[in-house]
Length: 436
Image (cartoon, rainbow, N blue to C red; front, side, top):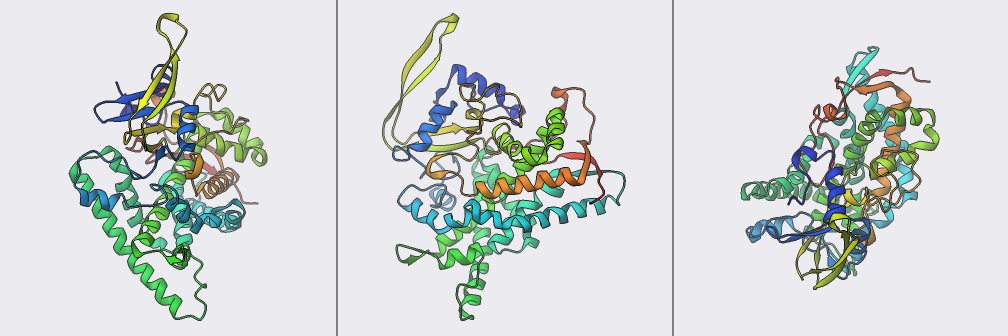
């Protein structure tokens, strides 16, 4: 039995998730020795129980038996794959920088970047009445990539390089052969060389000034940070830099792309949003986070033998069946956030994209101590991007013809990943509004 949505279902895995919640809400994959969990309440309990379910196995789900040198290079301790107390110490370094009140200060700069990108799109179309663009490559990717590059203090001119790095790392889940693992390990080495030069430049710049706190970039702050009265090692600084660069833009690219796709797929919701932008921009982004969740799964590992209770419908109209699920120590557990966000026991009419939805208890950013650090930034970028696109463009449409929903899903290429839900390209056409 499949534990993951089929390749052709990657951008629309919801029927698969529905079947798993109903028939196999907690299931063991004997071939790969791991569990799949699909219901909201089960996933929430595991994510909140970090004492019994660890994150220390690593951010990526590597196959068994890979050479130790590659696993050590890829699975370095970081915010994502560490437990308390080390996780708490790492998070304390940057936690205060990502609280909503601090992130809100970035709004004017994000608005400028959004408008600059839109100006370039209009210019590329020679100001024609009806224009086209690839929403992903022309807009959804460069926006968060520019923002995180400026926050970190890395040159945005190098965006093609770290785009390639991100693509390689994201592809690991689907390419777990030894050659691809070598490629990922090499990518980490390349990132080390890149960031080592940047860190050395930052240190020299700081030492040449009287005030060592002048460097307000994230890398500058991480260099100055202390954990238990000790500065971070070079390896720890490099790992932090890797994580912030990649995590700082991958999810937001999908959030922006998925929001426009969902609105074009549901024109009644797009019309409703256009008529009520001030009140519905935020809930529209939240519904995008719930419905086509940019991150589809996270992974935990059992610290000890654990027993979970499972309930599922009996066959032939029988009553609900209850049974005990025994998870052994060190077994991996795949938690399908994308399924949790469509759980009918939590969300009314979950298969409907509804930007007026009141229940915002989605788990797009996880929950518990590993709740996504960058959630406020992703939300702010998504809201500003969506609002500005609607203010400056009219008659947004897919730039291709299709007959029905099934035909629509054959017109584009989803990401080659079961970890992320998003598109590699999204061609749309639009008309430019006159700026007020």
